[in-house]
Length: 546
Length: 73
Image (cartoon, rainbow over all chains, first blue to last red):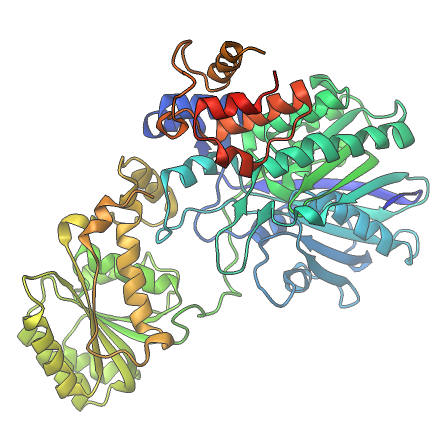
């Protein structure tokens, strides 16, 4: 589709990135000088900003839009459209935009919805809103939000070195664009969409994303360049001050520019500082270059976003750089709309005496998947653990087991016991106590986490004893300590990330993952029928080459 | 392009010293044959010969010689 409006004004742009910077060159020793140097040279990405554990795309966009609205001094009641263009909405349903519109204080007559787009989010988002505004009176205002958080390397992910080194190219970003219907403002556009390349960048709901770099490169060098050349001939003439592409890497952008007859001076970039920031790429680039743009007064921009689909959009518009805000840095995250959902939704779990690294790691994983935790153990160490959880409603019991029974109203769906440092006789007594006090749900599962012995006979006997006492299902996860190094998670993912990446063996990133995955599965509904099962975490995982 | 010139082009793309690669060199055994190299090669093929190089074709290359066969004379 091609077209032109004479009444759409791009009134302002703001964007936000997290403050944590990942410098490519800091990873020279870890990934090898050759690989990193070459990658930086080819991609042009010297550093990028990564979101910490709890930050979502909407958090970045909300910060950007709030600052933009303050700057523009807009009357919130005049905003009739809010579109959130992202691949990472807060919810699968509803459209996050509807929640955001409410949080921003927009009226109930404001249309709000999400659109799933990547690097072409700015262009297609602007064009969508431009069309919607046509039915409204002059002066009507709209907001476009775009962006994505870069893949956050959260603890519990299975990662290879190749995964991590690729992550050096992608940054988190969120942006807000203020759009207004006002006669005398020309906006021209062109789109191109090739569904034949649907699997060039692909992600199913329950799997990681996959990219065929060659298909994307091919699209960029052929289709994107060709469409831009046509647009230049048919629409633009000489009236462009700057071109602004979505921030795919240097290799791709240089080649497109070359084919279109553009020089370095004609094009704005931000990938050197922020990497590929998906749909926020074009707004971030404008913000990053706003001082340069401000020297000219009003500027004519030709933006071109291309990506997942594969599809692309080109937009030509004028903008006043005084309404382009400098890039904002923020680590804020809004958590009030998070609910206890996840693999262990509303699952009451009792963890007995998590007093070592392994137990602490397990408990953090259970918190991450939404488990409703109760911890019994020593006061100081439990309080330290609780401070690291997301869910602040975790119960701590640091007195006697009897006292715990008095205080908690809960019946437990699961009891997780790390056998290291724990006395089997004491555990038998504790399970008996819980059973006598009717504190265990009918379908309760007791999970023992223990070190491998020569035979499983002793463990089986112990499991049978606990099962007879309590009437519960009892399952176990066995591991070999030497092949299961645990690296304590400290607060947020930055130190974790650095510690993990500093290891030379990539399987160090995956061994703790398999253990906690095993525990989570045993507690889940899928394993309601499992009883007296033993999962051995194989020590050959240390030889795995992923 | 002669065979030798093609090999030199690959050495340049992969950023290895002249003389490192031979026709029968197995690509999997060369650390520098990674996604960065294949991307550079794809761009070169496009720029020089207007040739498309797909992921499938790349996966089919086992030796340096295979790549040289693909590059037009």
